[in-house]
Image (tube, rainbow, N blue to C red):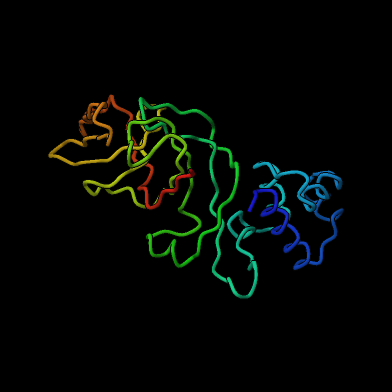
Length: 212
């Protein structure tokens, strides 16, 4: 389902639920009525800025906006945002500012099983080949931002200075080793006591997807 279709369905649901007309939400959100109409028909997508304005006008959070029931047979479907920020599985690189480019549906039971929720899960596309063959360029990964404690052997989204990376982590006394599955790339060693290194673990990869 496209991002335009998802936002269209969600917006229709909330306008109906709250008995609001297009002009009502347009006035409250500071968006033109024609823009609202285009979003409702799917002719135009919803930017992150407009999504925030609409949610503020509806007095709901962004997760709540997408938490409506698609139908009675699938009451536990949640939508997880795909971010433009691409963690580079290579030499690192923060490519964009993290704007939402789309939404993908997951069963709530699956998210719970993976130790997270709609609030803690985010999707990214991978760039580079350092994690090949596990992850290839363009693969999609689901990151649980809640799981930041390192378990040796698991794959994490990490940041060094302003560079995002997807790496397999290993812990040693006083150190964290960033490993690539591609043998062409050397491990990176992080000294936990080195305050000059701006290092952060954003979350653990709990799912991945590849298109062929």
